[in-house]
Length: 372
Ligand code: PMP
Image 1 (cartoon, protein in one colour):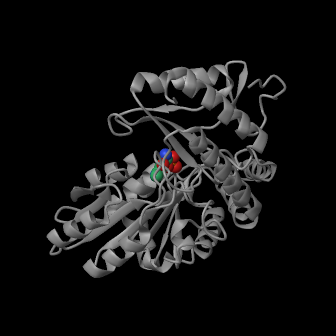
Image 2 (cartoon, rainbow, N blue to C red):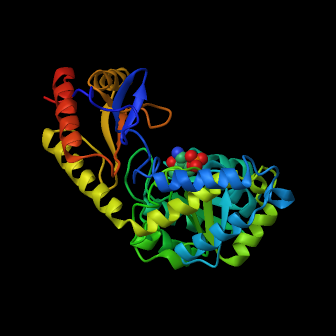
């Protein structure tokens, strides 16, 4: 694959040295990261509001932009209230740490994101990790800890390194049966699933059963930052207890303006979701037909399991030589023996680019003996 005619700024590409590589490893799922309307909104706010917010929101860093965004977020998520955090890592650690503590218990999928793991550690609640998506295991653990004061189940909606989905229906049933709270991290499903890109909980019609909706603005939204939505009581509690919110400087106003514009586009530009799903179907089916082992599901995160750490690095380097960026993910990020290329697609990728990419992947797969 030759990208000689690709401008270094072309959407869907990333620059390494003086080369533009087809970027099959970004979280810019909807292709909004360089959207002119978002950039314009950020520029305007930069000129009118200045570079930085100057303080935490609870001190003097608050601006009317924040409140307006939070209201729109709450409407979008069909919740009573919303709250913006500096990023997803701080949202997860701040929320979990403020909702549970010593004597409480958190049930967390083994493949949950590091920020969830760190949130639980910080909270000092008992950390009970269940086997990935194993609902019988969750049930037996909930039963074992049924007498604990507060129980929180927390899960990624779409798992970041595997691209598969949490069994939210069953988790909702279990949380109801055992009187637990349910928190869903929609980092890799927000913007992608749901009629207005609300996420997987909405797509399944379970939004009212999820107590804490969390998502980031750094992936589908193409900007930076994160949100939490839920009841008015939850948000009031977080404003008073979430240390990552209280003791950290508010996001720059230009970012908040960019997020607000991105939210409008996420809601209104359904065609981006359709294009992303078309690209995903094509890419997944072509890799499968070629004989590769890829993860299940329909999400734009597609792990191609290679197994061996050195082999996956070599695969990634060979792809780079052919003009494709696909990062090698190795333990401890993923379990031993499951080193993989993690492909993640974007609505800006064309059919031709993806077919060319699959041809390169197949050729390298044969050459390296990953395919026989
Ligand atoms: N949750 C999940 C599932 C993620 O994948 C990530 C980012 N990789 C985060 C939270 C953290 O979000 P942010 O990058 O906005 O800090």
